[in-house]
Amino acid sequence: MQRTFFMIKPDAVERGLIGQVLTRIECRGFRIVQLKMMTADKDLIAAHYDHLVDKPFFPKLVDYMTRGPLVAGIIEGPEVVNSWRDMMGVTNPLEAAPGTIRGDYATAPVDGNFYNVVHGSDCPEAAEREIALWLGH
Ligand code: IDP
Ligand code: MG
Image 1 (cartoon, rainbow, N blue to C red):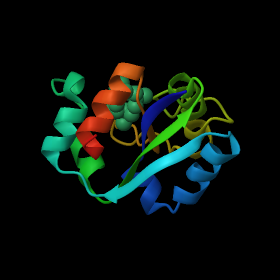
Image 2 (image 1 turned 45 degrees about the vertical axis):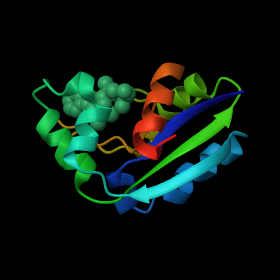
Image 3 (image 1 turned 90 degrees about the vertical axis):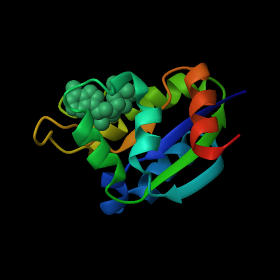
Image 4 (image 1 turned 30 degrees about the horizontal axis):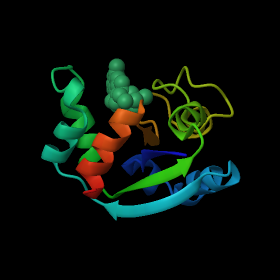
């Protein structure tokens, strides 16, 4: 059994998509073991996306991720790290395949910024790091 960290990002919360994202997780048979609705601050986003702080889009990414409440949580299941990434679809909404969450719900990029609905850790080590950072355990 594996666990991963996921988020329903502020754009999705604003658009009323929490239920639809959680439904996809449950329909797939993954277990939601923790959920937290919160508004992140810049320091938390900089720690979470520490590999992106030097990118030109980073200030917009901070604005995006701090502009309102998001839902952070943990899901469990076999191979859930990679499966959740597959369910999310790729980062760029224009490239995300239909049937994926991003392919079905993410809006076209505005100002070069990707408003792409969900987050998922990209490997088991990142999942543990992000769970500790966001949820404290
Ligand atoms: P991921 O969310 O698919 O794992 P990352 O490369 O980890 O993608 O980037 C984190 C987030 O930063 C993305 O989900 C997206 O919101 C934003 N982002 C990544 N690359 C770009 C870009 O080239 N332009 C604008 N925003 C980006
Ligand atoms: Mg990532």
